[in-house]
Length: 514
Image (cartoon, rainbow, N blue to C red; front, side):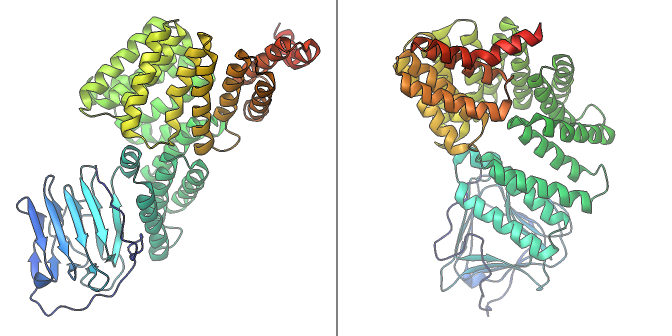
């Protein structure tokens, strides 16, 4: 995975344009293709380096570029005819790139002309091991510097600040080069939106995805894959934020466009089927959800095989449906199989493995296997410690699980500690009115009630109920649970009249349902 090292403080994180002195040395021609050997160094004595086609630093190899070097990409051509753009030159990093400019002698990447967009840029692939820029500029490029699968990489290694600055700069550059209503600007907005979602900045992510969709609808014909991609990404994020009414039409539109273009046996179609199935699962639409899950699983099994991580991830999501339908034996078995597949697919700790242990923990807890559940939650935390940054919202989930186990065992002080840690993470990662924060206050209030700390419990439960009423309404199951807990508090506190008033909406709801 590419590690984007911090850019030196005296150079802007956006790789600002710096002037480079012309060299009197003879040109070094790089025809294109893989660089030879494990170590290559481009020196000032050999500068300028003229790229005639896509140049690749292979996996396991390193390209070091010394101070004062100028790299020139032949304009509007690509002798290799390969890469992301077959008519523009790319410097592709599958191994390591170390750019060691100085304030006095920066490194410059540029075209052989001064025309904007006349070469493509530097591409750090998902397999790159190190990409470091110090006192460098990228001029005339279409994209400057980009990294494939960057959001996933950053989630794993936590290089958020550097990557955020680079992607924000790329978005600004594309708007300046091609205009705010352009395919290039829409693509850059999507990349930055994915990063912001990955780190839990959902307000910024939603704004960027919404802008990407607005621009894409203007510059692409209806049904174009670029529009479809934004539809399913924005819809997926809104689903994960439990804004299901907004998410569903986006996902359905995206799925219809994908099926029309690709048919059923397609991985993009399969991914959207899984996303829509998860939304319907959470709305109680189990019949359509199960149909979509089974179609998605069949496609991934046929194309990828049963041992592929994406087949496993779909199985994990399907297991949640089985859990909600009450199929406890099927749920536990499905999560165990998911964990087995992920352990086989990834030799090192991976976020999906943490998710599997977490989900398995909740399944075991629901069938009364408390200590097995606690062990599974601890395994999830151990994996997260290695792959997620400290404040990532997913780190709250196994903490909540451990808290619920201890709450069930009436070990209330331990439960309080887990719930407080989980709530702090959620408050740092989620919008203030998010239902998961409300549920965090509800759980904390239950632990405080168990210790008969009535005043503190009341404060937490009232705050949780306020948030959940706003997020889910009176009928939301989380709202009903915190309302019951608040009634239990007032009973234990010797305030039966308050308990009755709090429980009144529950009684009204029960009466109206008869």
